[in-house]
Length: 336
Image (cartoon, rainbow, N blue to C red; front, side, top):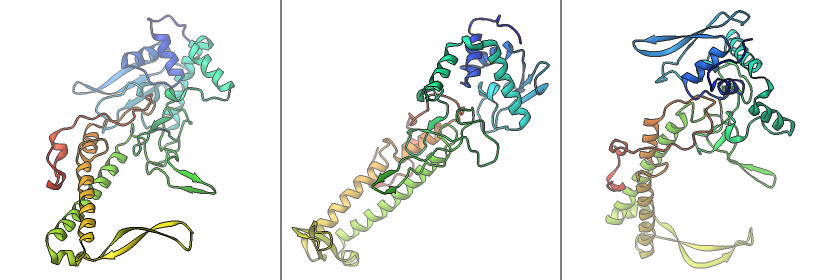
């Protein structure tokens, strides 16, 4: 193996390669490859770099390795020079692992980061703190930092819990009562936010459907308040009486309800309360606030794929709203 006589910063690049931490730039990624004797030749389309051909030295599993960016990526990611993209062929995996072992042979055990990782392992702790663990990703539903499995449903292979490729968000968001488990976050089993906008699209679709149901109900209640025939069609409603009674089954006290029709003033008051509450919800759905419909539109518009091992997790997107994100807002939701 070559000895470490390279420009300043190369040792840090090799350390990051060994620890499977993404390089901070293409320059750093190329410096690490050069230190282990790999020549990187760029592949261009027009003037844009879409990939690299890596020429490996004698003794490597393959003589050359071609890494191309996926068609949906805007630009080539520097970490792909070390970890590849989604090609999990045995020859590719062997070449990538050879690169890591070659870097390890140069850095040796003098790297403080490697020593820290080994000490954490001896204490029964993860090799890296949670804030630096590339297996911790962002759930696209609740935007919490959650572990992602290394299981690939498409059969492309896996490199381990803290390898460069992670796929599905693990189970979380449930509660446990005595003897029973209840609920789970709907982002479980989906791709992390850093790798897919699927959860953002599902969240947007769900809120659009909810807002439409609320809008239709607001229209129905508005007609009932204005038109006696519509009020009669809406039917009787259960209203509170201000009295309580004991439930014979549970022996707990409960509110006594009574059924009233449109001829009772309490009916109109009950309809008006529901109408105002739903209108507030409709306005909140289109307000532009966190997890509103315009917010999801902006998050989807600004979403870009990130490398699977970028740390720390991205978290909830910080978006910039545009007037087009409010397109389709009903008049009941108010003006911006």
